[in-house]
Each structure stands twice: as structure tokens, then as C-alpha cells.
Image (cartoon, rainbow, N blue to C red):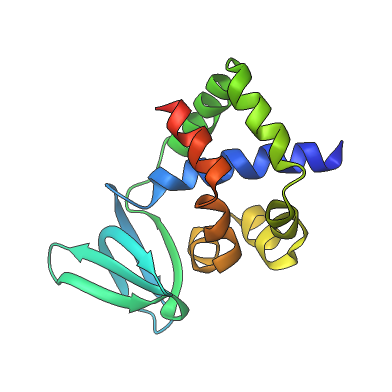
Length: 152
């Protein structure tokens, strides 16, 4: 039962992060104390590509980023998006079947057993999750992509 709950939670979290990084202005706090405001375009091979009005397109190593958060205080849109995803998933039997298959997926189990990933999940540390190859592999798995396709 615990695995099922964790699986469900992590899937909603993973699908929510698909939309977190693109299209919204973020404050990116660097380890050197600098703060950059911009739109996170992508993360590839541990390098973030950020579009900033003042700096243009810049690339920053994930290891140099302390945190990424919404520029303006949010009114709970992340929680609202997660609730909306949950309702849509629960109402679709095909999606629920796909979620059930994830419980047996060794890659998904590996992510659930990784203490660093679970620490980042509990802390809401988007940068750490996006910099984690196992978590990104989860986002790009065929099953998660199929669930995402069905949600569109």
C-alpha cells in the first residue's frame, strides 16, 4: 500500500513539474548570492538554459543554482495544478491502469527508494529534482509520457 501511495504522489509531482519550468518568470538564486530573474527554458546535461530580459539567453550549471522559485508570491497554483491532475487521472480508467503498472517498474521503484530524490520531493526542491538523472529518466519514461499524452 505504501508503494502505491508513493507511486501516485511521485507521478503527480512529476507531471506537475513538466509545466513548472517553462513559461513563468522565476527567481534563480545562485550559490554565489546572485539572483537572476528569467524563464527557465530547459535543463540538459546538468546545464540550465535561462531567458532573461536583462541578460538574454544564459546557461548555468545546475551545481551553481541554490534554488529556483516563482518570482511573485504564488496563490497555490502548483497545488491547484496537482489537484486538477489528480481529478483527471482518477476519472480515467486507462490512466489509472497505467499508474498501476508503474508500481512494478524497476526504474520507478529505484526513484522511490532514492533518499536524495525523496528529500528533494519533501523539500519541494525543483532544482535538485530537475538535476537528478533518475528523476528526469522517470519524466521521460514511456508510461509517464503515455499518461501525459492522455491528459492533453
